[in-house]
Image (cartoon, rainbow, N blue to C red; front, side, top):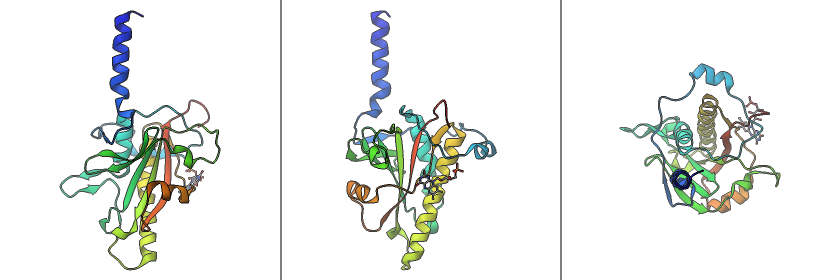
Length: 216
Ligand SMILES: Cc1cc2nc3c(=O)[nH]c(=O)nc-3n(C[C@H](O)[C@H](O)[C@H](O)COP(=O)(O)O)c2cc1C
């Protein structure tokens, strides 16, 4: 390889991997509304993955899975790709990647740093299992519901998380990505790590990766 080609490749690598470094704020790409399989094809392929690749998702893929999950699709009203009971918009998405834990800000379509460092392993029971590049944690803040009935709030929060979860699963099926909704997780450690309020409930987590060539 000539020196110039090596230099250009290095520069390209720097430019494309820049968003991966620990940053306070990651501006996501606008959603690509032209991508993806037809809905019925995606539904025919939807399945919970058992294996995950370790390659980091591209910025576009990460941007689009977050937008599909719970992005703003009607800017005039601020309403989302996922419905929520009473339009409480109670589901927050904490995004665990190698460089840290980020909170998805739908208004800015951006990720905001919550905690530095890699905490993806908190989700895995087996110390040695390979780390999926992205884990999305769906948290409902039930204080956003304008009702006094706590059991109703919990039910609505769980339902809202389920809908966000299905948006993730269908987007992944439509784009050949691997994901799995998981209720099991170390609630205590995660609550401490994210410094959650009593009204915030960890509902589901979704590892997301490219599909492994074999075994899915
Ligand atoms: C609410 C909910 C919680 C789940 N929790 C877990 C979990 O903790 N661990 C896990 O491996 N799978 C979990 N799953 C995935 C299910 O096991 C999976 O959806 C089921 O086996 C059916 O497989 P399918 O999604 O491929 O159709 C969960 C699914 C749902 C809907």
